[in-house]
Amino acid sequence: QSALTQPASVSGSPGQSITISCTGTSSDIGGYNYVSWSQQHPGKAPKLMIYQVSNRPSGVSNRFSGSKSGNTASLTISGLQAEDEADYYCTSYTGNSTWVFGGGTKVTVL
Amino acid sequence: QVQLVESGGGVVQPGRSLRLSCAASGFTFNSHAMHWVRQAPGKGLEWVAFISYNGGTKSFADSVKGRFAISRDNSKNTLYLEMNSLRAEDTAVYHCVRDLSTKYTLDYWGQGTLVTVSP
Image (cartoon, rainbow over all chains, first blue to last red; front, side):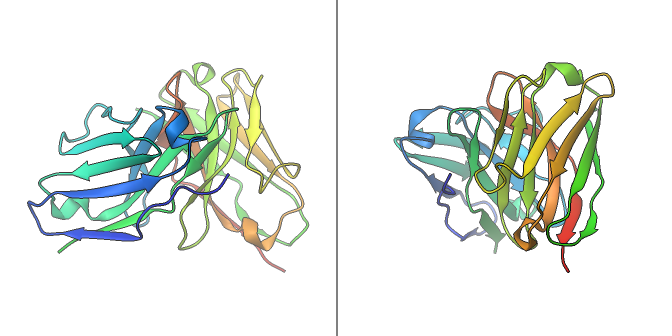
């Protein structure tokens, strides 16, 4: 149950696009299409942004998109806005009713 | 709207026990699996435990296996986490999280309750 690997921080200017990577193994990301991404603002509960690799829950902006290649999943935020500044966590199902999170990525809007 | 409200946190000495509760509303509780996820101060998220919609399947992170127990009372729309043999490293905010049924996804999160393990 080792944590998935995410960059500690990513930054971009308003209007730009950024991509956050999440690297695992064939036992988690590579083995299942059950990767999700959550956003957490300081002092708040996380909010689901992407599930099953690339699906957006109702109400989530289409500026958020997800993808996966092999053992690495990615979250792209296009048209970066000030409100997107937050921590982002990837999550993957790992089989036998267990899950694992990434270490988290702090997104800064310059 | 979906609401998950945790309670039961507090300060506890190492080696002691604590039980957390999570009151659910705004959805059909007995149709959804549930999770507990924790976040140590200033740290990232750590998945802790899972229970299926009817309590028939339970699973735990290696870090808490054998010390924590998860249960639910569908008649009361309530999820529980029984924590035994607590350690300093169990200090965290504990979140109750709904599972997006059949999609292996944690969707709605409660605000969490803080557990501090300290002498």
